Length: 402
Image 1: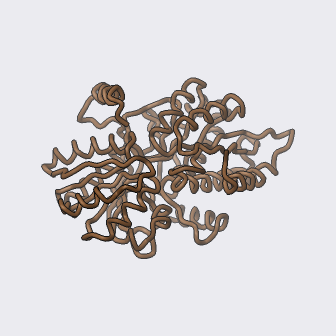
Image 2: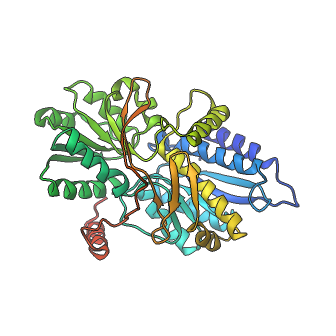
Image 3: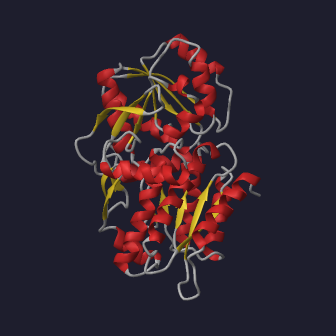
């Protein structure tokens, strides 16, 4: 069951979006599935707001094919099993034309066989570990070569060669750290330690003690959710060591506390501080809708552009049938807040510009580096064959590793 706040949130969104529906113009129904409760609600709730903004913008221009878009919003409860169950219900009972959502790779992997079974579409907005392709998923977040690898190259030049790895205990951090270790080894850098926390865990002190003892040059952080509060609170009590985070953006900084985060780094494709006309318009519209004090993160922007890509593909295909939309979307580009993006037709991932930002006192990022042009997505790093990566994943699953 949803808590009272999410119930009110969903009701207000539905009320604002359904007023334009008429019998002559049946709505196009989409599913939105994010965690409104549980440890990942910390990060996932804001994504619903940018999806809502995109829907309202499109509906104000007449919807898609002259029909309004209406979202069916459900709570994944930070549980992959709930995500899978709700995804199936959205398709079979609510008859949605597409699903937008998921954060953790565990939840995406739980939904993947559902959208494949029913030949529907999932728009997934998170940077992730790669090693996956599905014709039924549009990946609007970064692959490792668009986020992790550029940040490692920058860190080796600017911060040092002794690394400490900490992450949450599930698919993305473990696979990301495998890629990180391979990359650092090739650069003659050193991984001093590697630790994982269960999602939601606050038991950080033993790891902090080891950081204090080893004194790494850089900490690479793939913790997700509210465990980050405990981590940065404890880290503040010891000698300052720069942290590069891969799942902390503007909204998480606000919740963790700017005083704990100032001076640390994050690697993303989008920062609210990007100086582009398209981004300034996006920020203006979002703040007008949700309040001047609200912040925007990379996954929020990736959600927003995913919905606009879907709507543009529908108009081009003149159909809401998922397979026709999928074929149409492979030919589309968009002048997004982050820059020009387009779909790679072979992998259904986006070409994206890589960026590294340092957290300022106001909670925004000073962009200290960015790639010269959008980077092609490489879901399977080229130093192993696709089959070798797939065999490695199968071996890890048999060993019951997260």
